Image 1 (tube, protein in one colour):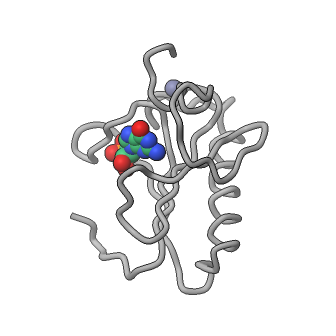
Image 2: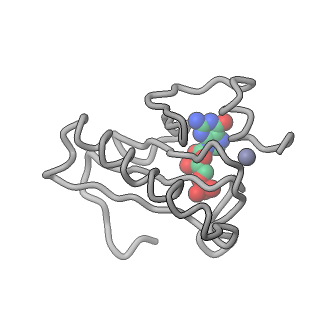
Length: 114
Ligand code: 5GP
Ligand code: ZN
């Protein structure tokens, strides 16, 4: 998608602090962090929302969780805990329409969220 912010980050057209990448996904620091660790994991494939995930995308989406857990462990959040979340459309506050898994950690996270 030529007008997608996260496709542009994936393609190196917009700078980001990339902390992890492999064949399936890319992870970078959120520009407006809501916790000491706030990393976004995106599939290389442009998928606008969770509604658009197809059966063929199952491994790709699962891969985001594996990558997020890896980074959480590297940053020693695995025992204290962390949150992984994907927002969908207006009521969840989705602002970028290329799916991304938020990894939030490093402070107590309230539940339920606001
Ligand atoms: P959403 O609200 O769609 O679930 O999350 C979008 C996230 O992308 C937000 O946490 C926001 O701070 C982050 N974000 C928006 N624009 C940029 C950007 O240009 N670079 C980076 N690294 N993060 C961004
Ligand atoms: Zn995209």
